[in-house]
Length: 217
Ligand SMILES: [Zn+2]
Ligand SMILES: [Zn+2]
Image 1: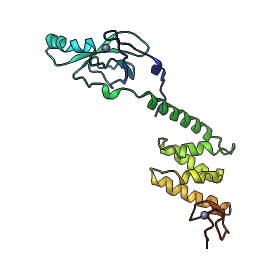
Image 2: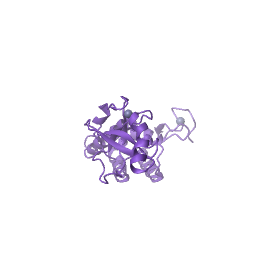
Image 3: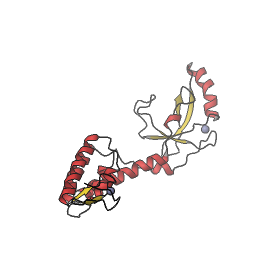
Image 4: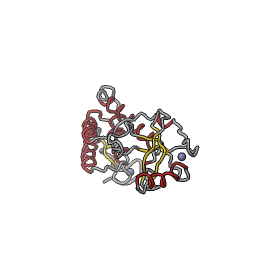
């Protein structure tokens, strides 16, 4: 995962050929024309099928090169410099149109993750469970950092970790097993146990659950 500069999402590019709003697309890894890529991971492309450049391009390329292809009008972020891309069909690039909401969410998740990794260093002395839980419950965080977070649970000894862990579906089942053992140890240390009927925490010696009134014998 990586943070991206998303300032391009604020840009509006208008196609000079059709006056239509251009689409922001993920750039192909390597562009066939120059072999070097565009130096940008996003491109603004006019994907309007009624765009005159696109409509006239078929004949133009056919006559000039004998290929079945056309042009799409393109601009790089931060510039109004004209470029064209050659496309073999009308659907080229339509699957790579960027969803701004998804990108913003991804960046937000990354930002939170980064802050939690930073806060993890001092979480025991700060008595701060939050970064541990953020990383532990983030399925996109690396396995190493999540293991590190798990190792801090016994040191923090905070029973507030139990509910979120119980409510989380771990894709990696080894996390579920390890956290379960830690929870058992934490409860024991606190002379507590989980009611097997309602999962609420009760005294280890309780004969009856104070939450659901079930008999615990
Ligand atoms: Zn256009
Ligand atoms: Zn109960």
